[in-house]
Length: 255
Image 1 (tube, rainbow, N blue to C red):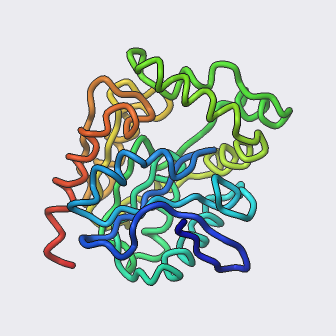
Image 2: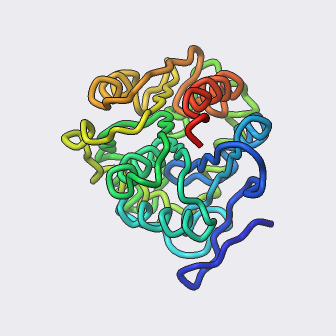
Image 3: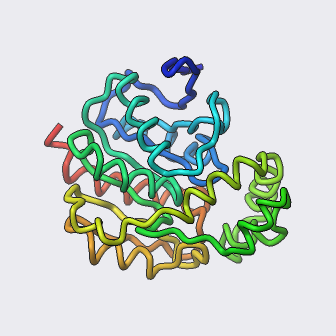
């Protein structure tokens, strides 16, 4: 299994670092893990070098979840250096998109381009959700907001089981990090080409979030995917993969 050791702890990632193609690091959202990118790891490996990381305190990575996006951003920078990557595309879903935007501002020379999935320049969380998690209670309707209404039952069941198996302390830390995140004023300073993917039925980060990113990011381009909600990369993996291939193909010649 691909583990890296740095900061005195083990970090897990999925994917083949020795493969061919432009490297892409995919970063999951709140309470998630590398498994949210399994369709991308499989579907993109013949055209890119996709890797999916478990953030500290998530999945198989050691350490603790953080309540601050900057902590994850700096950890990801050390992770990329430990991998030996000096230039790569950075993809992020939801909270992972916040980490990607923050990374592009803090370490711009590392980033060839961004892939933001179901994310935004600000990610406020409903106070009732934070209050529930603070009281160690998983909000009953949280899973309903993650998928489109017509998402397959099997996908919903898997997502529900995964959510219920996640430590509430991890969810609370992640959602707190999202709630404090706000880079709306900084977006025009992010010059890297950016693909912005959003499910047409995303209720957590609606289309207007993606349209705002497209408007404010100098290199932003939006791809709306019909019939998908917040977990668009699991709901419509082929459409997401094709969008990523089309996007990165524009810039692969620079590597």
